[in-house]
Length: 388
Ligand code: LLP
Picture 1 (cartoon, rainbow, N blue to C red):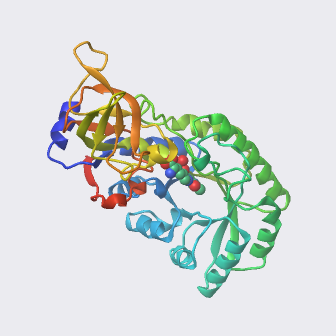
Picture 2: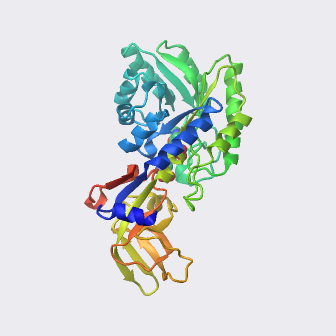
Picture 3: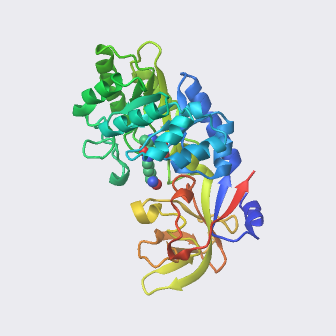
């Protein structure tokens, strides 16, 4: 397999994003059929990866989309997602973005504040249309993940403060251009402890009952995304166990007549199909450590620098077994070329003795990789390789 990869990549400049499209298709098939079992709907969270090839594969396999900007809505539609299967979230939707969403008749606005409801109401009225509203409730469930990607706690900026719910309901009732269609929740990202989702279900059931008792029928319960992946061993579980995930909700949710359950999954769908591939530029032997300096850096994959995130680093020049006696293993700090000390992909990583030009892959980079890349240091545009 590696030899074949090397041949394929030989003449392609690095750094490059390597996308395994068969794995992506298989993942989408698995998530779709696991969700279909219970009639659940999955919206792919476009923010995780908006590469057009990736989007068109996902849309053609029948998922909806979760968008966080007007441009994401436009791109989603251009790449084949049905506008009736698009949900739109975000604490800071602009007037222009709200117009784009309304003109495209999206499924729902996941709204996050009283003022936002007022503005959506005004714009819907001016366009003489009706906006479907799902209230994003902050469930105060600790996702126990990195604090930068925890969103469901009272101290986070996300969701409607519960003391303002009544005001929201009154606003919606008094405007014929607003229609309450459901509730929205999202507790955070890279959640690998399913107990977090159990706690979410408890809160969802409470809120669902609260609205039911008040006489509201809410056709949609959107439980957000956040299902995590195994960054340590990307090949051991290249497709996340979606069946367990959905089964948990199936067991615990207390649905009312006619309610549909929706999810917004990003990372678990695209992370494993992408790797950032780089070449070794230089080896520098320090007094205490060896540095492998790559041609990719935090500008191509920000997660290690921003969240101290772990990504598995692999030698892709040829098939090697690090356990074998024949391979000379060295320990490197694997760093990028950017003028920042945080530009480091991994410390004390065991790799075969490296030389200039060797190929290194940084795995599980399909989610929040390419999308968070930047031109800092006036870096060159990315290169791509799509395994068909
Ligand atoms: N729904 C909402 C409302 C969200 O805020 C997010 C992610 C998702 C769905 C998708 O979550 P996922 O299934 O991908 O976990 N840049 C960070 C992750 C930020 C996640 C933001 N929200 C990272 O690289 O880890």
